[in-house]
Amino acid sequence: MSPLSESIKKTLTYFSLFDYPLTKEELFAYLWQPPWLGYEEYLSAPLAGAAEKGGYWFIPGQEANTENRRRRLLVSELKLKIARQAVKKIRSVPFLRAVFVCNSVGSGLAETNSDVDFFIITAPRRIWLVRFFTNLILKFFGLRTYGQNSRDKICLSFFVDSEHLNLSPLKVEEEDVHFIYWLHQMIPVYDPENYYAKFLSANEWAKKYLPNVARKSSGAYLSAVKDSIIGSGWKKMWEKMWGGGYGGLLESQVKAVQSQRLKAGVKTAAAKRDNSVVISDAVLKFHENDTRKSIFENWKSKI
Image 1: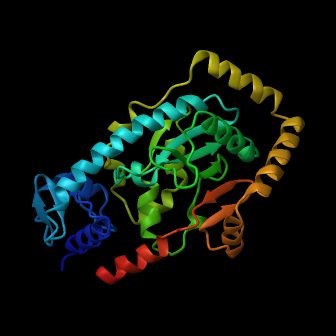
Image 2: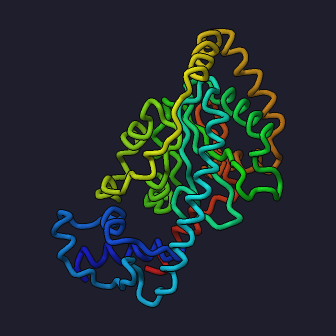
């Protein structure tokens, strides 16, 4: 098997775990550790080990997934509209720097009952304040996930501050395949200071596995939410007032309140230090059912 065929096999095997065929351009962008070749060379190369239908490529025998992919893309686009509406409610929260949509909606895998996961970047040493206010506002407008009520609701699953954008310490395997693809399947819905570029730069280590990923289409980012004039002024005012010692005191107070209210299961998971749940002053990651290890093992097995 040629190096390109081996890369195609690994790539399509990963996406087959989610019944997700790829366009030819996406396949090039997401090739897992491919040999070096230019895009024009790739277009003329035979894609051994892959089958095609309706412009989508997949492991042979998975033709039925092409229609499923189209349906999921439509559902994901509808949920992106919900994400943008939610972001308009929280964009003026002091010290909030960027909001990306991640997980099922970000990767185009959303189902009708899916929630909308946010990856939020905050100013340094204000992560708990941002979580407090985003939670409060989204709950007030009935947009926050609660218990079994998750369809079309916002899940605040991941916060990082702007000094800790490199997420390599959170890997669960050296080849943490799901995590590495996840990093490159986010959609910025609020990013006035271009933190998406800073985020990708901070995670340049992933290019070892996905050297072509920069070719992924960025069309979905064109409709990102902008700051309003009034909201921007309001935000700057509070950031100036809370930028010093008083803001630090507020940060410690809201941290104490929120830490106390965290579910016992979340605290237990964080104590394991297996990177499924992370609770710190720089990273808040709430994925009690972190599936990365099982996905990695399933991927290796199928390969």
